[in-house]
Length: 164
Image (cartoon, rainbow, N blue to C red):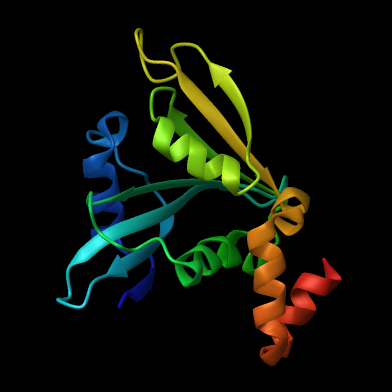
């Protein structure tokens, strides 16, 4: 069973940045976070929302997890994307992913992300992929369709999805 923590949580941001080599020394600055806590009370995964631009409706997400933990559930996905798309009203979520991280890129492809490869974005010898998810692509994806079905008993969130 996974529990969740939200907010301006420095512990989650430090956890995530410590697991991403490009961020270890600089962190995220002003951000919001979603942490996933296991049944023993340990932080096993985290998502950090940063570089938010309310005028353009764009936010960047970065995440990390302890390998082998079972944290990526439908509930977790719902919580990960409810914040940027429904609470903030973003029109685009952006992630920077190392080009050799095939597992994460496959997962993001299943969620309807589009990809742009950028040479050397992570350093002289490290290419990255900008992973872009528009609100329309999120809503058209199979996960969001299931989410709409499950929100029928939560009218306020369901109305937000329908009105967008």
